[in-house]
Image (cartoon, rainbow, N blue to C red; front, side, top):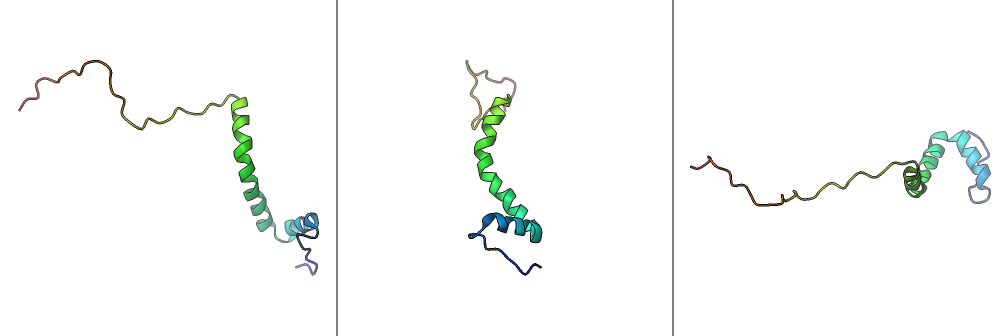
Length: 77
């Protein structure tokens, strides 16, 4: 391990370069996790621009048929 460990707040670019070489799994995990929240606001407009539409909402109740109810015959006790 390197003897020199830069402090994040004093020089963030140097710290990120050091972390990407010395602790790559942690560094890229943080980068991937930090990219998630902005993508929530960036991706939907791009999807709509490219022609992708949101699916229809799932019905929460059974649709009631219109017109009179047909009474079944032949099932009497």
